[in-house]
Image 1 (spheres, rainbow, N blue to C red):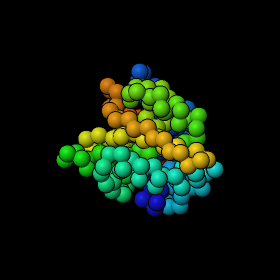
Image 2: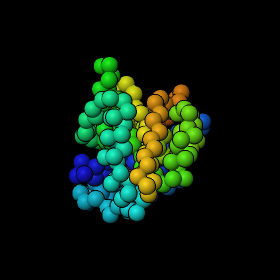
Image 3: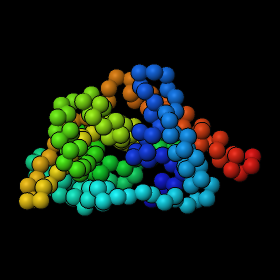
Image 4: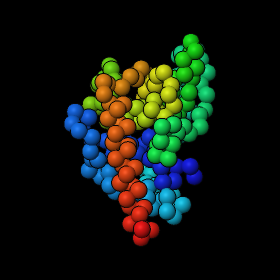
Amino acid sequence: MDTLQGVFAASDVYRLISNPDQKAVLRKGAKTLCLEKAIEQVTRRPLEKYSNKNMIQGILQQPKALSMFEEINELQAIKTRSYRWNEHPTILHSKPDAVIIRDNQRIALEIKCPTLPYHCKYLLCKSPAHLFYTSKAAYWQCVAHLVCTDFEKCIFVSYFENNEGIQQIKMLDFVPLDGHIEHFKQCLLLADAEKTAYIKQIRGI
């Protein structure tokens, strides 16, 4: 996790992204995130991260989700390292939950283990456009994986297990909507400039 100090992670990026139908600007709350990253970079210490019961449950269930995905698709997933956006390696790092290689394609996996209401919403998603309107945070996280890895594809996975142990999984092939990759990159560059400005203020430059 040391490599993420002062660097935007895929889970951060939704806080940075403005409306992609408009000119790229930093969305509300983005400046706070930029300040947090500036503090981390100057102090070389991570800020305390918030966690809750649902997040912990998701972490515990993720291996089951990955195992079910592998069984259904008859393939083996690979645990991954953190990838950097090669064009600007100091700005964005992204770590897919796993990587698979199929038919010479490298595919990133983004796995969610949400509560039942959110899982039901994901079940209704038939396309990346539906995912965009259902969970913009998850959508932009998948975009971040593709930007950083240069992989050919990302698969979004939602997994749920009820109290009786009955498992259910949703898999969605993810392809970004037109123009969203470029908009994403523009917002990241704006955020990095904002973070740099905060660093100069903190250091009294």
